[in-house]
Structure formats: C-alpha cells, structure tokens
Image (cartoon, rainbow, N blue to C red; front, side):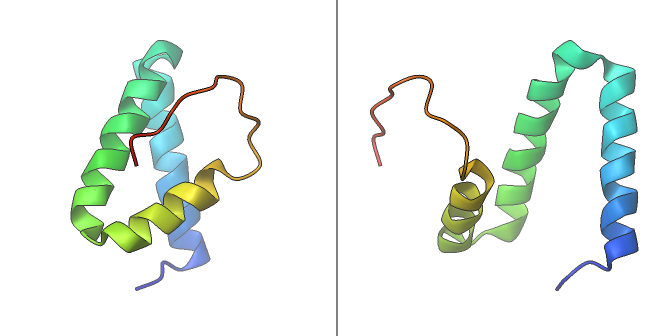
Length: 69
C-alpha cells in the first residue's frame, strides 16, 4: 500500500511538530523508536534491508565500524 502524497506530507509534518515539542535532544531517540516500530509492522527483513540501504545511501562513512551482518 502506498500513501498519497498529501498523507505522506501530513504524517511528516506531524512527526516534525512532535519532535520539536519533545526537543532536539529527543529527536534521535524518537526516530530510533519509530524505526523499530515500523520495522515490526513491515515484518519483511528483505524489504527493510533495502529501505535501510536506501536511507543511508549518499552519507559519508565518518566512523569505521565492522558490521556483524
């Protein structure tokens, strides 16, 4: 199922306002919690791996970390 562009924009706006009210320091924790909740809802590891790769694409590797996967 795909969200309509306006639905996506409304959800993004709601998330931004909620994070703003919680304060900048809480944003990483909120986003991490949201990511885990959505991973649970999606329930498809292959789809999630693709989404993770797409979300991190284009960001420089600033810390060398060995992945266990």
